[in-house]
View 1 (cartoon, helix red, strand yellow):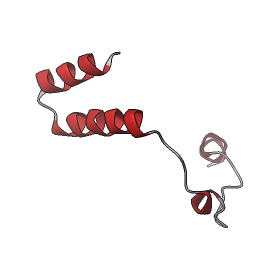
View 2: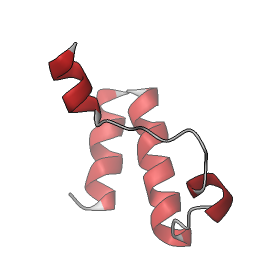
View 3: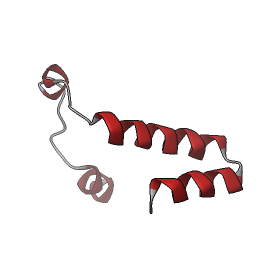
Length: 57
């Protein structure tokens, strides 16, 4: 879906949350998305995937 179509669809629905999401995605598309290396090197990492955990529980 093109950005203009996403804006039009969100406006048609009048959904503020969807408008915010489209705005965030449009911004991210313009500036890029570079993760902070400090965030990636966090000691609290998952030892199991969410789907595996859900299946086990």
